[in-house]
Length: 175
Image (cartoon, rainbow, N blue to C red; front, side):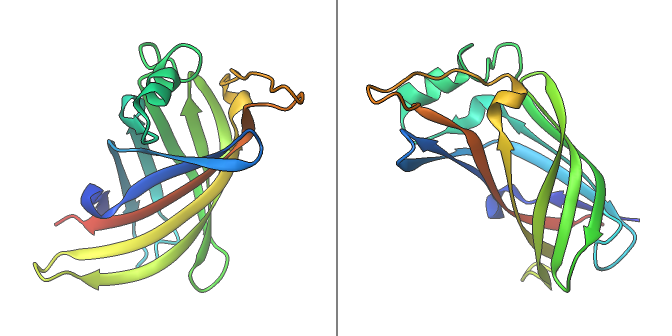
């Protein structure tokens, strides 16, 4: 079994959520870790784990970040981590996979399905073997108890329930 760990300097974990239903706010988690174990060179049997430190949320606006960390949203004091454990990683096409697993967020665990594009494997100048992936998906934040919202003058909502996920991940094969 080959073991791989996320290279945080060559990876990013982003999310997008509609604000006032007219534009997206993009945010990221800046502190995260993850690993994969696989026997197959094409990763088709990979077992994957991932976690992010919710306190590392960054939307490029300190006041909004503080609100997101508060009990209105993520409640970082009580739920400091977002965690994912795969239940399957199946090949859908040449470089396309479906990643299924359990996502725990805000004390709630739900199954999720994510699309994964395999970018390939290469050796870096230091002799390390690395592989790259792009992971995309959607989730409904209210299913995780993240229900804070406010109404607009026109009767719309400030924050949509749908959250788009996008992670660009590079992993390093462990010796």
